Length: 83
Image 1 (tube, helix red, strand yellow):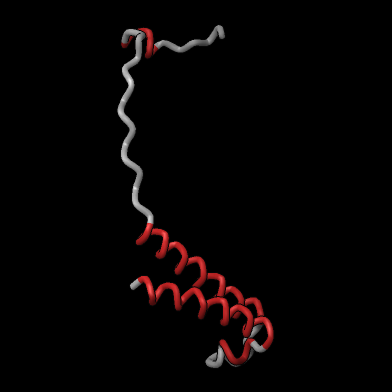
Image 2 (cartoon, rainbow, N blue to C red):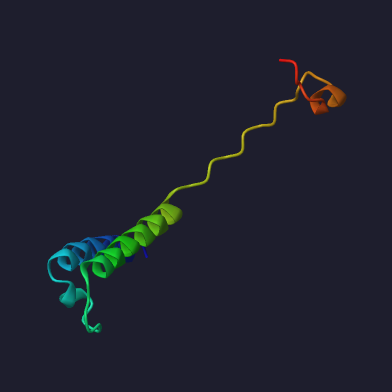
């Protein structure tokens, strides 16, 4: 899966560059393709693939231990308006 996503990154960069030069090659099914649609497709694929790679490879951080407050519950709940 990771290899597929890395190849999708390369493909999205290729779609972006080719879409800037010849948008008809990327959006061959459209009657009048424009550069904005072709580059938007490349950027969208790039963002999706990098987000998926990060989701697969990064490990979540361990939760930090909860520190007990020295104040009582009543004092924690009062607003400190006169700082």
